[in-house]
Amino acid sequence: MERNEKQSDFTLQKGNSVGDSFRLHMVTWNVATADPPDDVTSLLHLNSPKSPDLYVIGLQEVYSGPLRFVSDIVFEDRWSLLFMSTLASRKYVKVSSIRMQGLLLLFFSKLEHIPFIRDIQTTYTRTGVFGYWGNKGGVSIRLSFYGHMLCFLNCHLAAHMNYATERVDEFEYIMDTQTFECAKAPRILDHRLVFWFGDLNFRIQDHGMHFVRTCIDSQTYHLLWSKDQLMMMKKKEQMLQEFEEGPLDFQPTFKFDLNSDNYDSSGKKRKPAWTDRILWRLRPKDSAPDEQHADPAYARKVKQLEEDEEYPLKIKQDLYTSNMEYRISDHKPVISIFTLELRKMYETPLVHLQAEGDWSADIDAMVLYSPLQPFPSSTWDWIGLYKVGFTSVWDYITYTWVTDSKVAFNEEVIQAYVNKEEIPVQGGECVLCYYSSTLQCIIGISEPFKVHESKVAIEEGLLPEKINRLDKTVAGEDLWN
Image (cartoon, rainbow, N blue to C red; front, top):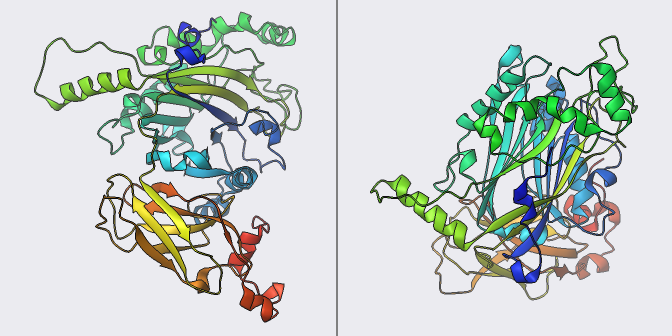
């Protein structure tokens, strides 16, 4: 398996740079219904000197028994809580997630990028092959990152050695059926950059067990590539040929005995395989149509070509490997780190907002905000008060509705008030976020500011046990127990 030539033209030298560089850390892991481990430091490379801008985590076979699944609908599931609590202290926010029974997809971003992540939509597709309706399929998150349309598709495809063709059929079915309410990218392949990953379940065929084990022991993985079903299917399936994958220079990630690094020792003795994969597709650079047409598709195509030329995007895979440290599943997690280099289509948030004056629970507080660009405002827009280190858009301390849906776009400063009863008594370091109900995302974040401890509470000798839950949030107490 050779490295794709498209990776080699990527460069970060200043003279040849197309824009800003962003680091993307991706994980796919079939967790085999296990509860999360205590520590995911090595999975997320938290001790690395280079911190990612984005984390995308796709899990398969998250436990979805009836009682647990119902509770996960009402509350966050245990896996999501683990990643949220781990990353929040490092100022990553969960931007979006989607769950379809055992399939779970999570998207995290550094706080600084949040106002520039827009057009967020999620969807899912169930596949019913072999009667496992809902247990297999795909979940996706699509969004605009500084104007560039990205799509992340986490799949769990049909199992067993003899169903390579069915796996391709399922993938094509998912690609055909998933659509989005977006004129620029209504389908997955319309996106500028697509990531396809998950437990794709492709196996190593023809080679016998002894040969496979010998290649693994000697780390001559390349001798197995020609019989990897995904690589074999790519030779004859046009859609698969558009997806790139780095070299499989790590040992097959399936199937292991639980709590060990030993391959299947059961009576079935299933052959090791690279079932867990991460691939990507950068939209091809098509040439401009020869003739002009009046239909909207032609105009959209021309505009797309012009936009691609003006705002280039390049991708380089920096790492593609498995993590042998985790033994709770019969699969090992697979990690890939990418560098995205792109020219931003916009660098200004839609709204500027700030805390006015001193904030404490002793007096009503004021927020000042002003629209910097036109956007579809609504009376359902709101401004939330968040603890620095919040986990998601819904992890606010309190919120206030914006005062007017018909805001002027002349940098007029608008006031909104927060009731003192909603401000935490103990104070803390906080930020304000403007949430657009129409765009369904945060479109402006204030600079961090200090909420002061209530002088009245101090004078009245407020006891710690009387402090409400909002204060515990700001005080940083553990809410995950």
